[in-house]
View 1: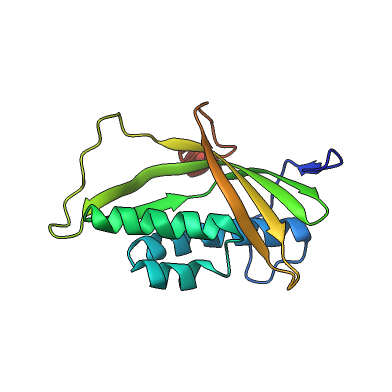
View 2: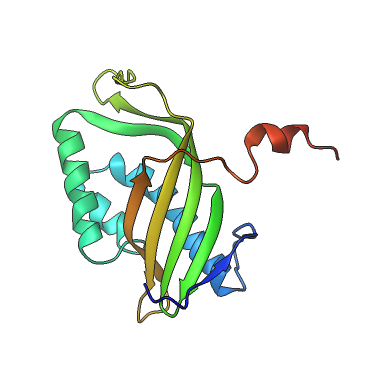
Length: 167
């Protein structure tokens, strides 16, 4: 990504009709996570069609292969992830989103039984996510990669802080 990227620290909420480039990037990123959940419950072919509007290049094939491997193991995603975008960086037709995503309600289930697949590691509450996006010739922003970093994160507005703040 070019060095001339400009950060936006106070990222507005995504709306149905975003006005700024930063809002469109955030909306594409946020919608991707909802579509990814549906894609994970689909066949690989259906997953490809669902993800095409949100994912670019080799990352699409990587996700479709991940769906295939998950289905081969008899698993699918369940629950939800809640993006909590901290930063959006923009450099021309490239962008980066930094997210401290709430993953406390996301898990894998066995497709036959619907039971949660036990994890060997402790359940995570937040995932430190960095996503790269590129604007296509059609003007749409699509994800090129998503990286979950080992370093822990704290969301800008933790759920408890939002619930207990004075009105």
